[in-house]
Length: 125
Length: 404
Image (cartoon, rainbow over all chains, first blue to last red; front, side):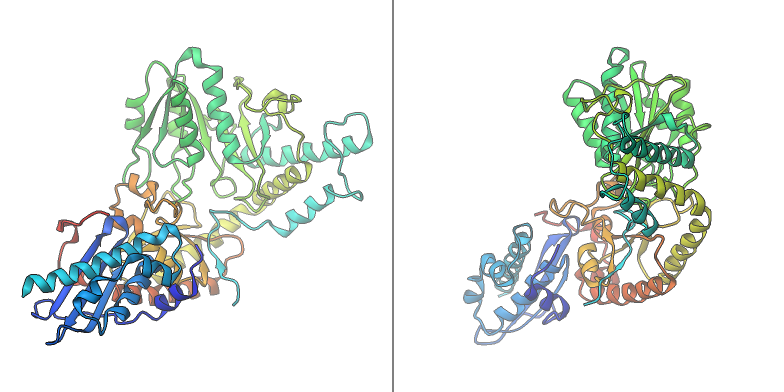
C-alpha cells in the first residue's frame, strides 16, 4: 500500500523514540495492542509539578501507520495538561496523517495508548 | 527515485524478451493474427500451426502428450475447471474431496463453493515444515472420496510436496489426483508420463510468460472426464470454449520451451543466490525460516524477523520489492493463513518476509538486499517494545494482551 507523505516522514524520522523510567511516580506508561494483531504500542509520558506533560517517549511494533500515529502523538502531548491530552481523538490523528480506512485502527490504538498512560499516572498518585 | 529491485518472482515474473518478441508476431496485420478455428483459409491455418507448436512446447516440458493440454486463462481457471469439472462429472461416485490448508485460494475457494453445492471437503493440516504427512492423507480418504487436490510447490514458502507418493496413495484408493503446479513448472522437473497425476494446473506468468494464460493437463490414458465450466463453441475438445488467444498461447509455449532448455542451469544459479541471501542473514538474532529448507524450490526464502512487523519492514526496505505474510491479504489485516497453518504464532506470521528471486536477479542485488535488511531490522527492533521485552527476558506469550 502506498503511504502518505506525513506517515513516511514520521516513519523514517520517528520523534521521541525511547524509554522513561516506568517506576517513577511522575511517569505514566500505556501499553496497548497485541502481537497477534500485528501492533503493540508503548507510550510513556512524564509530568512536571504543574501537571504538564514535559516529556513523552514511545516504542511501537507495527505497520508504518502505527509507528507514525504514536510518533505524532508524542509530539502532540508535550506541553499539554493530562486533561488536554485526554482530549486527543483518534480522528484527529487519522486526519493529520491522512490514514486510509484500513489503517484507522492504528490511530484508535494511539488514542488508547495516551488514555492508558494517563490512567497509569492517576493510579500512581 | 530509481525503481526497486524486483524480488517477488512468485507473485509474477517479467515476460522474457524472447517470449514477448514471439508474441508480437501474432497480433497485427503483418503477422499471423488469424483465428486458429478458421480452418478454411491461410490465416486460420497459420494460427493453428502456432497453437499446435505451443501445445507441444508445453507438453514437452512436463512430459505430457500435446493432446492432454487444455488452454485456459490461468492457473485459477485451471484449478476451477479441474476441481469443479471432476466433482460435477463424477458426483454419482461420491461427494468427498480432500485438500490442504496451505493451498492457493483458487483451490480453497473452489472447494468452498462445492461445499455450498453439497459436497464435503476435508482441509488437511500440513506438518510444521509445510509438507503433507501421508498418514494424515491416508486416514482422510473415504469410500466416497472422489478427488484429492494438493499443490506441487507452495507459493508462499516454496516447499515441494511429494506428489509421487501422494499420487500413488490416490491410485491405490481409486481417487482422482489434481495438482496445482503454477509455482513448480520450470523449477522442478515434471514428467507426467511417470507421475501418478490425473490433472495438473499451469500458469504462464510465473514462468516468464504472459499473464492471463494457463493450461490444464487432463490425462488421456485412462481418460479423465470433466464437466465444462465454460460453454460455447466447443473448443479444447469441449472442455473449455472460447476463441484461442494465439499470441498468449505462443507466449506460454515459448516460455515453457525456454524453461526446458535452461532450467537446470538456472536452478543452480538461482539456488546459489538464494543461499547467498540466507548466508547474509547469519548471526542475526531471532530469525526463523518458514517451511522445509531441503524440499524447497531454489528461488524462495520465506523468513521471519521476530519482533519486527512485516509491513513496516517492507516499507523500510522499499528499495527491494518483496512480499510479507502480513501483507498478502493486507486489506484483511489477517496474517498469512499459510504460515498460520504451519503452526506459527501470529506475531511470527506478521513478521515474515518472502523473498523470491529469479532469472534477472544478480549477486549485487542480493548483497544490497542483505545490507538493507540487516540495517532496517536493527532500526525497527530499536523501535519495538517487544524487542525490549525479549531482551529483558520477558516471555511475551505469557502476557495477557487485549486483542483489538
